[in-house]
Length: 144
Figure 1 (cartoon, one colour):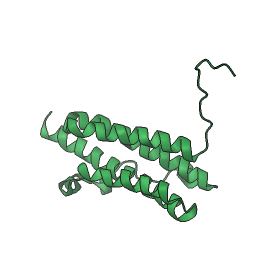
Figure 2 (spheres, one colour; figure 1 turned 90 degrees about the horizontal axis):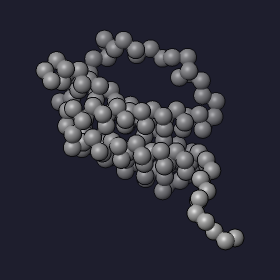
Figure 3 (tube, helix red, strand yellow; figure 1 turned 45 degrees about the horizontal axis):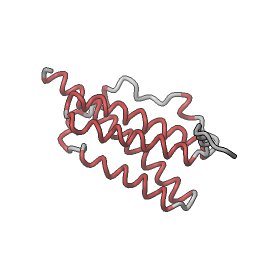
């Protein structure tokens, strides 16, 4: 990989780290201030703090907001009517960013890739818990 490709990947990392941190922070604050659920707030905070392993202040040099071709707000981003809408949007944002980071770090720094895979799966579990989706029934044989 040449320097230009590495620089472009660093820009992707910067954008997705920001997106992931923002999504986690909103989910953390909803649990903390809206629902008063310290245990979930703390879990999101731990996930957010685990990102420090990938954070590098030097990465800021790759940030190019002025030339971002997709920085405008979309219509769907403006449509939120319930707290669950905020949660769904930010779970999706964080999960998608985790996946992007997992893949890009396979090229830039493979030892960091599993961190983002773990974050993504933790987010899937938290989403299921917090949005109250029914648990899958066990398929084991029972003699009830």
